Length: 499
Image (cartoon, rainbow, N blue to C red; front, side, top):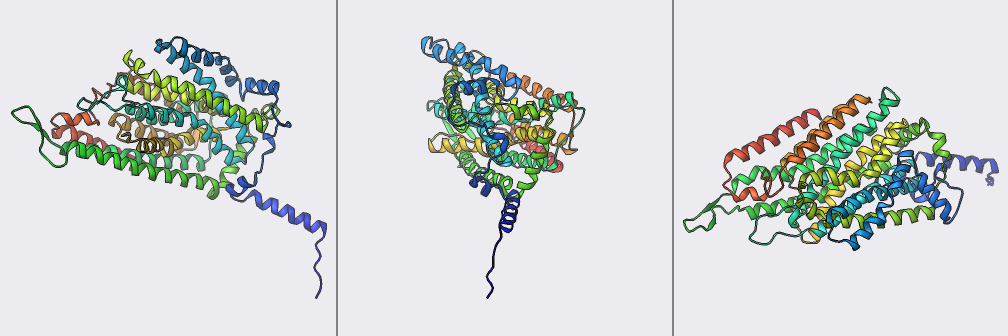
């Protein structure tokens, strides 16, 4: 029998063919093999303090570099927190400003870590690191939440009830990314180039997932609005409250909590499917889109010439930023009662103020990428965090509350649900044609400003009764329930027709 021989050239060809096939294989196997993109290499090893400080100062773009001048607010906030603990508004202000450079460093370190990974994996990891601040914020808020004393009406933010603020922050995070961040991306990109074109794989997948997430978040609120008029409360001649039906307000609230908990588990499963879809099914498509965008980057040569972190320095930067971000978020949450008591509404604090600071790093990154002409990557950074908030971060805090025996649910105010659904529909219409310009960006920002103005005047949970348990403390006539049902049905019809 003849013996088969393999020449060196054959071995080389076999090696090349294996490499070629590896370029088209799914993300997860290549991630486990540790493939590294060449632009993520620093050419150094270990930790070098001078290089570390230099790379940190220069960051990824000029805006991030200017943000580093805010670092003195970080130690100042920590010092004032212990020296002048009674100056609540000062501590809140310093911590709020100090969060910006901390989040910026976390985002930049996430970018450096992502550049050492395959393209699609790097983008997903970068988005995840950018959302760590939000996850920490939600967890700190639910841990600090205090249940109202039995027999008293539901409290608001100045009395320890932080659940309305968490709910507002979940939806506010989605709105901030979809309207403000995406609007600014379209605007700055349009200033440099009249029209930007983006790939349908990014926009259609992102917008479809956001609609699904919106339906998932809307179901508990729709359930509550449909049934809250069915629980009837009357008072006897002696002044005692009598429940005239077995379906009591407490039963409805308990059902809402269970629905929210199960829905949260399902949404997290949907997020896992989203990750798997990006990792395997559409790896070649997304890789091609991102690769094409980066080759068209107007600042590509300058970015490649920048000094980079080593693996050790990246780990140190992530650790430092996470420590400072966690401390400052704890200080922020500690002062929320004083801030709300000073006159800042709960809904404005959760819907506008907190999402702005927690998303600072992602916004700076996305806007810089859009200005450089990398519009698909910028779009990914706007839609990706919104999807993660709706499908993972928000449901995660519900599950954490479930573990801590705190009644965190997804029963949002109808006002906020309307804002999110309409916001998703507006963005979907702008993405449909696959092009953007500065006018569309300006319009998205204007919509966000209008929402901010409305949220400032929206009453606190102890006053607003559109979808809260306190609405059940008064005779619930058919008018309010009918209005809520009609509004939700209109939203569902509009969303279905748009999809």
